[in-house]
Length: 121
Length: 454
Image (cartoon, rainbow over all chains, first blue to last red; front, side, top):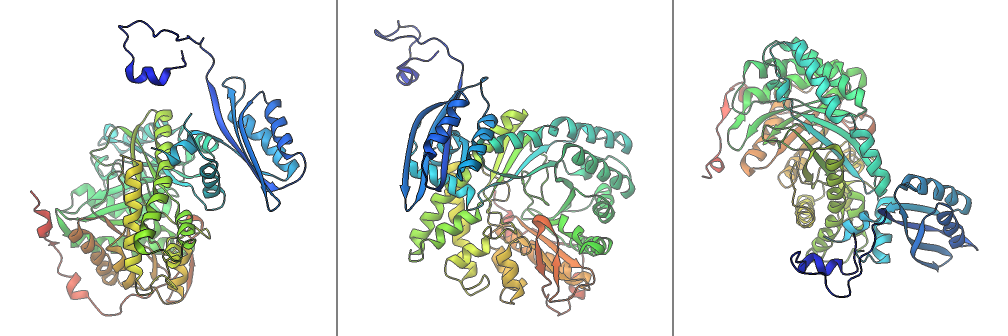
């Protein structure tokens, strides 16, 4: 069960007290896997669309995306999540690897924990 | 969600894709204490079954973690209780048989090496220790995946000089037996002072007596990442450069911590240690020597090399210690010659000598590592060289090791191809001065004053 004030409760939660006014219980959802997709390569039309189309076709969700083109080089970072059980990380990696070959992009798909862990304690 | 900047994401990707960031070894330590028996066949069966049962999923789990995080895990290995203590009776034939059982189990589960064909004899030999050491040449020559180590010295006990001489004999014997393959067998034998009980790196890994039933120990890597950081800042003072290396070592170590936690949980093992060693590989751009050269040395071996290595080693530890609370193993930059293209190149050009490497041993790990010497090197010259490395470890209360390869039929200047991660190296000269009378004394160099710390 997740709630909108989960962080607050983790510090101050008192099971003996009633729930705070205004708290809305959210129904349990299947756990989701969050990954970060990066794509690098020579720029051309439709690169972001190609990656996003593959992600959508895999039933994954784009949570956030940013892209730049510098000196003709396309750089994209996409936060993607999907429900566990409906898609595997390996499945998404395989689909995006094909997109990488078709578009000439170097695409990586990594679990977000590697980024979180590397830069933060 | 923890906020991650685009720069951090791209930095992580670059470190892995372009700078060879990987996890060098995920090593499962397995206690074989409950496999002990006086019947060698029974021990062989128990050892084989236990390794297969506990480490059977090590390779697929490592592959799964590798794919999840996109970080290559180069080696999957197993370390076991020092074998001298597992077989309660029997001669060297029995130990050779046990080595084959270890080899078969390692092959079955798909790992590249199993370490722990070992004995600890710093203070003296038991009958089983003698039988095991006598078995090493045949065991190493006849198996593919078994690695051996013998601890002959410690700060607490001093140096067992009889064991030092014995190890020199073992090296010459195994070099002769594996002469057809450039004496590769000697590369799988380490002679230690102050051997760590939780080292994930081969050939010296063993699962010590203070370790839990099953543990996961991880060796980080990342010389390429550090080299690029150093090379990208040619004008920084040493103070600022050390700070930069610390920050980078922190990131590298965090990857090891993540992999260790996940592997331990998935394999039902206790998380052991993260070894904060910069471990080079023969790949271009994965060299500790190139880090030193990026600091401004024309070649490793130039005046200033020991100072550069000391600074590097210390900064890596300081960055790493913030990234994990589970430090252990060797935790120091490695300076192997054959496994590091920069070291091998400097040695071939004659600017890096064995004597300089010995001095560098005082400020890092592991010691005289993967050094090829002429095949006609005398037993006493080998033994004296090992004793020198042991003395540095004993006096400085640190781990030192010797992995010397007296390549049969090779002379100074020849090039020896050991293959794979073992790399290639030139044959280096040892001092020609005699030491026979010194080595003939035997006995034990007493524990130093540093042993009396209580």
